[in-house]
Length: 432
Ligand code: EPZ
Image (cartoon, rainbow, N blue to C red; front, top):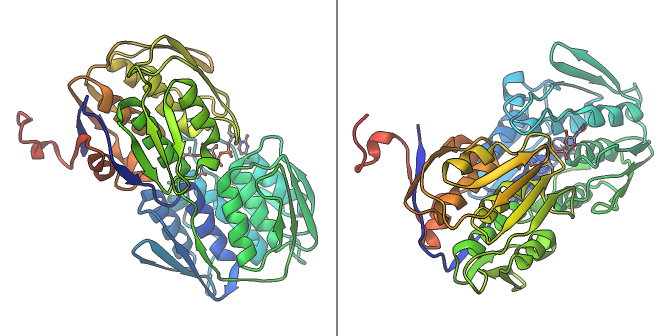
């Protein structure tokens, strides 16, 4: 069972470069299925489990996917199925965004419904309602949803999303790109990853306007072709390093971070006393003058509000802040599982429904902890870096889903962190 071993208390300094955004690459790979001709090349693609899963999913139905370093080339002119294998789709909720491209281009898609996951039940009802508004018929068959478009193909529609769902906005933007007529998606998710997807779709020949606002307008076209695209930087990876630098740094520089994508996090770190400088092609961060962050209140919400994907990380930082903070999670109903793990390290946090009250303690103590989801894992690494003594972090498959070379990047900043693939590798450990 692989684990991370972290010696806490060592100051961080220097430069770390963030890679392409996981949550942008996944829909970009799905969108590549829309191209009936030509080759797509997507650059700055991180090496992540989730990216491999999506590549495997689109390959399983006939896409030719070739990775060359940090570039991925996709050719989708020989798709032979509209039903990716259930075992692949169920591995990752984000796989559901292959539905829109398949339904739009082939008038049919049969996709396994995503299983629940650690952070909530995360339905796809808004995706399906949107497809139905475009004329599709949805049938639920034994854990699958079988979608069929009208004989003439999907039709443009006016769609209102009850919740500005990131995935539903992506799926419907892609489906509308090949629908007949004009589609308006209202109350759309405004995340930068959706803007990135719209830019890629337009490079493929689509006509998408308004991505990044709550109203997206799409004029359907008859066909799309491959295109080249560079993924936007990963704002959550960048945010994770900014929190680390605010906790333990002496001027950590996060290269390739886009401050426009991180305004809410930067505001919160500055409110807590950290100093943040936008240096155009990166962001530099220093801890609070007195060495400890001050307590603040954080409330997650849809972009551009404070991101839910940065909730666990800021909670880890506030667990050693001066004073009592509150962290309110409004997006997912079960995203506090890192609280119990932080408590094992001495954090004083108690939850009341969607709010966690974080009483700052003077120090955390190293312990053996387990990641319960991708961002909880990152939070436990941050806690280990600031704790006294040694912390072991298990559940690395969660971390590997969304962080490329996390250990070497933190080592670059001076952290005492290493990854052991099996316990016996640990020379200092007693044999089991
Ligand atoms: C995306 O998930 C991200 N994943 C998540 O990041 C992120 O936390 C989330 O957006 C919110 O920002 C990817 O982009 C791959 P949603 P997604 O649809 O699209 C409800 C990470 O750590 N909802 O915006 O699945 C849903 O239950 C991951 O990188 C419906 O009710 O999220 C949730 O409460 C974790 N019906 C809320 O909307 C639907 O049909 C937001 O979900 C769809 C969603």
